Length: 226
Length: 353
Image (cartoon, rainbow over all chains, first blue to last red; front, side):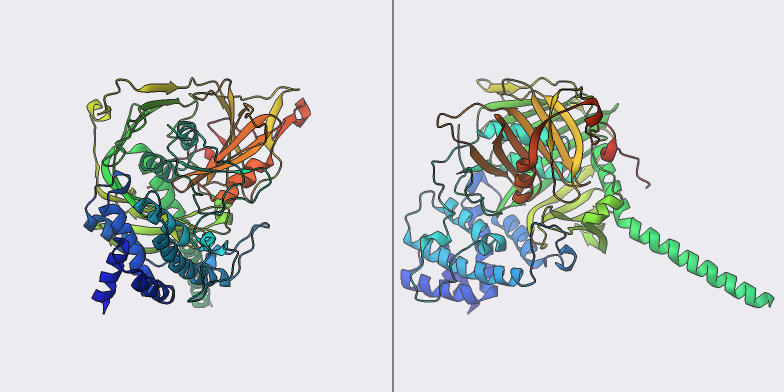
């Protein structure tokens, strides 16, 4: 049974699963935690195998890293009760986030299947980043879709700015990060420089006074300004 | 009577010993963080590690050396972009072959990488729960698993697998306030060496035809004279305070850029203030961006572009950027929190090991 599901997941990522089966699998994905976890692993491995961003690791390494990550439980949230004034934390948020994330994951597959997405596998990886974040999922304004209901695209696509994108030059942002790194904790410094080395700074812009971007969401920008 | 005194003395000693042991064990995780800081910044090492973030994995190599008080460091992307960062003393050169650009950043002379990290103290403990949760084998090495959990959502947390013998972090996870892993570094191999030759710090990239962008360091503003306009934040997320005020030039910026650093002891946010070049539309624009798990937020205040950058959640950089204001100073109103480097919360005392 697992092999069959794995085969279906693999076919889905290769864009070879018939639309009807894809829809069924997406619905099952929204209910089945284990399947959702496997879907996440497939996304990572798929991204690596497709050599996105020039990744040339073999699938085993990526799989091990991904598997290690998914096998490690999250740190206890008990110690993370908020002390700040501005942010409220409720016990139900992680549960709601997980539930919503599952729903949004299913929706994203349906949406991705239905769109001719420029960028192909890049777009899949980005969508995965967005929908796997409980915080991002919590920002979804609409109620959860139920099976058979037509799904609005806005669940997947971050809010469209009311004015055209304005891109911070990547080199300028890189320079800020480099200048900041001199004042960072050594561990953070390592993270900062490593991230700068492997990633393209993403930028999203919104007019003054508009809603702030969702935490954890890159917006719709991985820009190549130059 | 005598035996009763002896037995009460024994109990007293026992209670004292237990109390001391309790304090020692409570301090121990923080000491491991200080040992790790010390190891990362003072040892000579050469290692290969996997960087994981947002489902992407990339291998990098780091070579680090301290010789005669000068830090040399080389970070190389082994696949993908092929980028290289080479630090020699106060100069950091970033080779970006995918953009045909070389960035040269010169840190103000007084900023030393050897002193530029915080001491773990009671203030830190107010905003993070620091615990040793296990001792375990990792990659055939004995490690201490230390967790640094944020107590609110203005900062990130860490899980650190610290090598028992070298105090190097063999695996590092950056976590959000709910403990979800958002970025990870894992060493595949790591060698601590007695010496590393100069040749290890030469770039492997030919830079013919590349655009070179560099800045010139300017002295830190250690004093603020009366009547000067200074930039300050009128309120900050809990635990953050200004630790550094500096001025420097940035590539592409027409004038000096004010550089403020706010820290809670572990996390830090830099704020850069520079003259804003008006956009054609004339409308104020707020921008947010991310590099890995770090965020930047930029806005315009009184004709100046204010950009906050830090390894913190997006709401924190926005909070701080939105709080930055220009103030005219008087001698009596000199900001008390000005702390020229080195010193203040970034002062480093050698950790016991």
